[in-house]
Structures are given as structure tokens and as C-alpha cells.
Length: 466
Image (cartoon, rainbow, N blue to C red):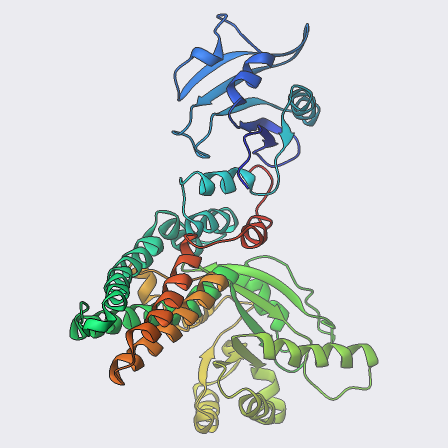
């Protein structure tokens, strides 16, 4: 897949801005850049040192397109491992287009999505899991996802997998050696040490696999459904959490007829709040569709907030308990937080009555006033408690990539087969097959084993210019 042609792309977001960066990479990148660049000190870019900056103008024959700064990075000491230059020009979309079109005419071609990072991988500057972390880093929108992507890009996950693979490979070599001396019936691989290694690999794999549950929600945000009967303050609560007027607030019941979603970062973790239509019996066709969507959103959510207000309690008592039981029974594994809104309108005795009635349901009960902003921080802390951030605080490796998760599961399955082979005195040639499969799945993670289709699928999700 590795081409020697020079590629060009805009490395900064499209649109007008103060500056834009146009990146060129390839064997002839510096020569191509030099052909359109006129230094204010008449420098020849092809003989300048790597990692230097040069001021001048981009020239289309005699026409000056812009005054620019050109950065030079000579391979292999560059991001891609190839000769690379970056042109920092003014951020006019017209200027960007004119410079890129000029470079295309000079012999560059437009880069494919993620092609700069693909070249970095193919040139050994990054392994595959580190390359994927680049995309995660670009898309990170909270502290936790940024921290995980940085840890993976620095090679934390890769190093852990590489160490296990190397140890397993050493034993695999001894097993293969035994096959060469099969007639002598000798063992080069100490079965006791081998079993200890397999136990250690199994422990690490299970820890990494378990971390995916945390990593996946950190990467994609934790969906939280706000549910309850109409006009209890769900939209007001959403606005209070987000600190903005995101949802329509009205005294008219049934105002929210569709789901409204927005995101909030709490303690470095992204939460995606879903304000749903109120649950009640209704003849309104549109509102009925909204209520149906509410139960769909509860199914998709990882945490459910059931909201009711104090006025509802004063009028009809604890009739809403039926709806809480319905949600609890239908989704027994989902954390359910019952939130009393307008707590400032209840007496201590009334609060105690509610607490006693709901005790049998085994749900978390919080007391707030969305309008007065009472108890909102306590609610945020409660939501944060549902996320196991211990591994994150301890800077442990956390898996967020579905492809890695799948490979780890397959590797664990093969390791289990090898362990069973040792326990049952399976022949070395059969064990060697399972060991090779485990090594294959380890290699798939870091890119030691790969194919064009896999690389195409991974880098197709990158942005152009990265």
C-alpha cells in the first residue's frame, strides 16, 4: 500500500480562519514545496536543515498567492517517516484552494482519509493501535476520553500486548523445536513455567476485556434517560444540568413530544442526557408516539432518572410508584434514580413518607429543586458514582476500541485452549496450532498481522489531512 508519490491536504479544519496549514508528504515533498516557494532570503528549501521554519511567498509563476511560513521535516524524523513540509498560510478559503490547486498541478495528489497516519504506520512510526488512538484523540471531547487516547497513543496498550506476545512467542519457539525432535521424545518448554505464563496472560487479557465496559461508555458518553409523568419538570431539570435553556419549559402538560438530547461533562466523563416525553395515558396520537419513544430511550440508556414533583404527591399521593415499579421490573439491571423535584414545597414529614414508601423498591432517592438549582450537584455526583473511574485514576490501560476488544476475546479463547492442552497432555503439534492462533490475534491488535482491507476500514474513518 505504501506509495512514493507526494500527497497534499489541508491539515486544519475547512473554512475561513486566522491561519490554515497545508501538509505535503512524500519523497519529493520538499522539492515540490521549493518549486512554489520564494524565500525572502533566497533560501533553497532542499538544502535546509530538518525542523526549521522559513518565511517567504507562494508563487504561481509570477503571481504571488500569499506570504507564508514553511516548516521542513525530513524523513525519517517526521510524523509520516517521509519528507514532509507544512505551509502555514492565511486562512482565506480562496488562498487555501489556490495553493492546493497549484501543488496538484506541480505533481502532488490529494491525500486519502487518514493517509498521513497510514504512512506513519507503514513506515514504522506508529503501530496500529497507536494510529487508531490518533483518531480517538482528535474526537475526544472530555478529560477521560482524552486521557485514554493519550495513554494509548504513547504506547501503553501496545507495550502491554507486545510484552505478552514476546513471552508467548519464546515458548512457541520451544514447542516448535520439540516438533523437530519428536522421535527423541524430549521437552524443551518447561510445562510448569509455560502454565504460569498462560495464567499471567489470561489474567491480563481478562482485565483488559473487563475494562472495555468502562472504556466504551467513556468514549461514547453515558446515555441517561430523564423520564416521568408530564409536566413534572424534566425539561427544567435538563436545563439546570446543562445550565442553559435547551428544552422548552411550559405549564402545559405534554409539551415535550419528542426526545431532546444534549451532553454534559461531569468529572471528566461525558453524559448524554435524553429528555423524554411524559409517560401517561393519552388519546393524542403525536404524544403517544413520543411516549413509545420514551420506552425505547429507556432501553438504550444506561442510567434512568425517574422524576416526579411535590405537587403531584400532594394531589395524588404515590400513584407514580406504579410507573417506577414498571420500569424497575422491565429493566432490572439498569441503575434507577428516583428524583423528587420541587423539594422546597414539601415538609420533612412528607419527605419521610415518600422515603418509607419507596424503600421496598431498592432505588436511589434524591431530592432537588430544578428551578431553584437545589440538589443539582448531588445529582451529578450520583451519576458519576455509576462509572468505575478507579482504573482511570490509577492510569491503567482501558480498552475503548471494539476491534481490540474482539481480538482480545479471541486471544483469550485460544489461551484457554492451550491451558486445556497442558492439563490433558495434548501433543505439542496440536498445542502449537492454538499458540499460533493466539499470536495471530495479538498481532492483529498492533498491526504485526494485517491486510489491506483491515487498513482500509480503519483509516477510512480518519479525517482528510490526518
